[in-house]
Image (tube, rainbow, N blue to C red; front, side, top):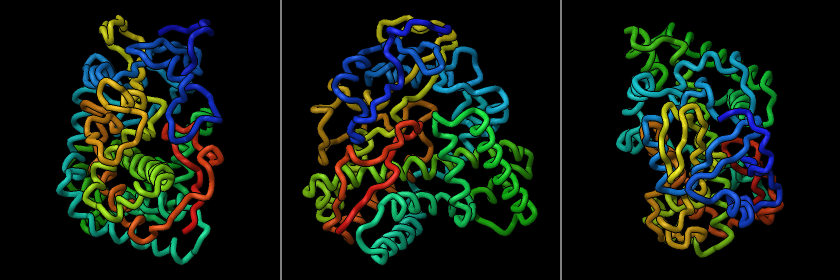
Length: 407
C-alpha cells in the first residue's frame, strides 16, 4: 500500500514490554488485531493488511499471487532496507518465487527429509548429552539458554554444514543483528557482508579439497557448483540462510518450551515418564509459542480476495501465524496448552511452497533435548517469573536472552 498518515490505524508490531513472554498478544491487543483481515500501520509509515485467522493464513501462504520477493514494490518492511543492504541475496530462496525458488530448494530437499534426520539422530543425541553434562558440571544456578538451548542446535547445524563451531560467537552475533529490527541499515548491511565474506572464504577453502568432506557444503560444491548447476554466490546465500535459521529458531523454541513446561511440573514430568508423547507435545509447543510473532510477509502481484477483503496488486500482506495458531475455529481452548492435543494443523513452520525446509531437524532437536533434559534433570525449575525475563521483542524470531534455572 502507499505511504500513510493514518495514525489512527493499529500499529504493527505492537510495543508492549509488560506482555507475558508465553503470550504472543495480550487480550487488549488481540481485540485490535484478530479478524479475517485488518489494516495496520508499519514502523516505516507504510500500511499493510494483517491476516490472522487460520483459514485465511493458509489461503494466503499457498496462493501464487503473493510474492516473497522483498525487492518488489509494495513489499511490507518493518525497517528501511536500502537497495545496497539486500542487493546480493542470491541463494536466499526464502525470498524467491516460482522457478527460481524451486530450483534452489530442490537441491536441499533430500538433505532434510525425515529419513535423513533419523540417520543423524546419534549426532543429535551426542550433542545434547555433551550440553547436559556441561550443565551438570557447572552446577546450579545456571543459564539454560547459553548452556543448552543455544549450543545444541548451533553445534548440529555447524556439523551438518561443515562450519567450524569454534567460530560460533562470530556468526551468532552477526545473525542476531540481521534479525534485530532496531539495528540501523548500515549495521545490518555490515553484518550481512561479514557473514557472507566468512562463508565465501570457507567455501573457497573447501573447493580446494573437494573430495575431503561429507558435510553439506562440501557435497553441494562437488555435486552442484563444480558441474555448473549452482554458482558460489548462490551457495553462500543458501549457507547463510541455513546457518541463521538452523540455530536461532530452535534455540529460542527450547528456552521458551522449558519456561512453559516447568511452570507445570506434571507436564514436564510427562516428558520423562511418557516420552512417546513427546512428538505430539512438540507440535503443541510450536503451536502455542509461535516464535515468529511478527508474521510472514508477502506482497500481492495481482488483485486477490482474502477473508472478504479485496487486496490489490502492490499491497503488502502479513500472515500472522501466531494468532492463526490460536484460532478457536481450529483448536479447542486455543489459549490453553494441552500436552495431549493433536496439533499437527499448526502453522509455526509456515505453509505452502515456502514452508520451513528444516522442520524435521527442528522437531528432532526439540523432542530429544526436552526428553533428555527431563530425564536427567527431573527437578529443574526456573528461578524467575516470566515477566522478569529479558525477551527479544525486537527480533524477527522471538525468544529469551537468558533462562535462569536450578535443580
